[in-house]
Length: 435
Image 1 (cartoon, rainbow, N blue to C red):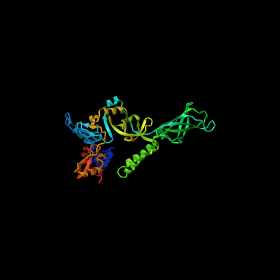
Image 2 (cartoon, rainbow, N blue to C red; image 1 turned 90 degrees about the horizontal axis):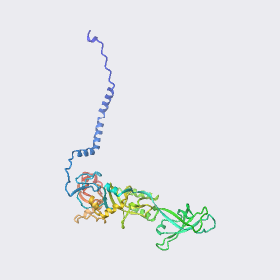
Image 3 (cartoon, rainbow, N blue to C red; image 1 turned 90 degrees about the vertical axis):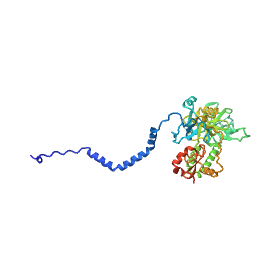
Image 4 (cartoon, rainbow, N blue to C red; image 1 turned 30 degrees about the horizontal axis):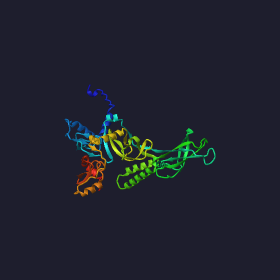
């Protein structure tokens, strides 16, 4: 029997995984270009993280001590960051600036002092903070007097009484304003009251006479009964606040068309104006404002444990809160418990800021930076540029301006720490400068 006469062996059945594997191989071959591009973009996106990890793994640890005994590095944007070695700020990634230990550096505009406390000292002093936010603030004016006989007979006839109020309270009241009154004969009962007349002041400081009418619906009121009425007036309706908001709105409209990028400023002014129309005002608790005699100061927490004493402008106190006119922004946190201790710390040790940051308190505004008379054009360039192209802050906010020549163009920055970023991305930053 020959091999050809033997019966043929049964053919092997195809594997159930062959078709999926072949389909996957074909799909991978056709999409390899897309996968290559995706991998490249992923590496590009993660490059800062990979570079930081590589520097951390390959950087040799310091053997101890510092660069020199009298040198340290600090961040002008985050003054609480101080290092003995040149590095970058872990908060804002700005290159730390070298300085001499104990060197006095002027504080930013509007900051009169700065203090830093450890977590233990903050807990020991009981310091607590509260956000600066919008609240509905109202003044309460009380008018008291004896009920007078009604002008017409009848049990339900309206009865009136007159009371003296200070001039400062009288300007908060208007004829026809409605309030709530109580009488000694009915201590648990409230009556509707309305202002009928506000007499002119006979002399400055003598106060004004306010006549109030009560509705004697039950007929149980008698002449000679002592009565007091309370009237509430929103602070947003006071004449002083209206004048201040009118001036603020006028200034924003005057500056807006001139300065590029002023839309956020106009939007903030518009939001405040709209909220004021509904009685909502930016406010802080009464305990957050320190009266120094010549100004009002609030301590703003800029970093954990770091407080800046900021001069603020406030209106008349409404209950437990002060309306804020200037100096604070919504969302900032101010010290409401322990603010007096912070103020005492800066007063007892005026160089307390220098102890932590190399910054001293500034009682008077810094003079404008003087330039040599041989460079008269620099003053014009500074007045034209106004802000630092890197931080977009005023040129004198960090002790500057510092003059540089980048790509053949004279540029001013707010501090030496901005030089590295400016030279690294000169094309991007120079575009924002005025021509």
